[in-house]
Amino acid sequence: MKIQNIKGTQDIFGNTAIQYQKIENLLITLAEKYGYSEFRTPILEYKKLFVRENDSSDIVQKQMYCLYDMGKRELALRPEGTPGVMRCVINSNLYKNISRIKAYYLGNFFRYERPKKFSYRQFTQFGIENIGNDNVYCDIETILLGFNILKQLGFKKIVLKINSLGDLESQKKYKNKLKNFFASHINCMCADCKKRFLQNPMRILDCKNEEDKKIIKNAPKITDSLNNNSLLKFQKILDLLKKLKITYVIDYFLVRGLDYYTHIVYEFFVNNEETAVGGGGHYDYLAQEIGEIELTGTGFSFGIERILMSLQKENLILCAKEINIEIIPINTNNFEKCFSVAEKIRKNTNFKTDIIFEKQKIKTLLSKAQKNETDFIIIIGDKEEKNKNITVKNMKTKEEITVSDNEIEKFFDSLYKNMDQK
Image (cartoon, rainbow, N blue to C red):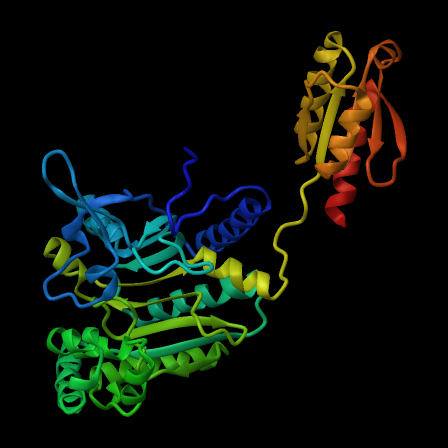
């Protein structure tokens, strides 16, 4: 029986894997420039880390992969990164020794949602968390980093959609306003909205049902419910964004997909697309719910698959094609020299270098190399052994060059530098 991969998962290899690496390396490099350090938390956590009292978000209610271990403990495959990082900070007592923890993470996450192009049940996410300081400049720094990441990736049009959820006092006031507004509509709205009406009416604003959206657009705006402290924080962030020349749009109904956010929330959009490539926000009470301590934080995450799709739509090529070199020994007694030449090339370049051990005619091997888009073939036989040289064949130009053994390193080093400049 042929076994397929699970629906909503994918195999990543070849050029796609190279593109993933390029994106991920750029994200990591920029995060480290901003002072963030890598955190690697477990893929498997206790379910209660993600599920909190009266949580109404779809990620928690519908999309988590949950299981019991042999000890009948309830576990979950992580659906997002922030709670794991916060748990790690609390468990390791990092907050006691460091005034501000700046963490980044990269890895696989899992949500049981409807699979579609570049939206998977196992997906790759990169995120940052800035924990331990309530200063609005920490929020601004994370937004600026996210904006610069997208700029470095090559996107020309980047739009930041932003909103403020305010503090708990403001949210309580807003929820009452929403309940009053939706009370006369809720009977004709979807089942999810009816449930959210009882749990957290703010979550109704995130409904994707087209008929419900028509009702939602007339709902009260949260900015009318913000107290003075929340308004001042929001205005300060908007003023700083203007000074930094970061284009933003206030989306009064933006609530994000998780319930623990307070104050600023935002999402990044590129090239007029309707789906965000990433987003984040501020959170004041997550640490209290996880570890009963007061610790504020702010951060964002990007979906690597979503970024890759957007790059492909814009024909933004991140990865230059790898240079592939294949070394063909004519006889088994030529193997030793083949290894020596391969190591010299690997030492001086980033060219992908492989030795072909197949026992086939040279003509057949050259034909295979052509199909595999090999760039250079190196042939080593008894003649090359005797004359202390190698034959390098350029598979594009068909030109053949003879290189002496003592010039091999210099030749490929020069070839590598010239191609790198191009």
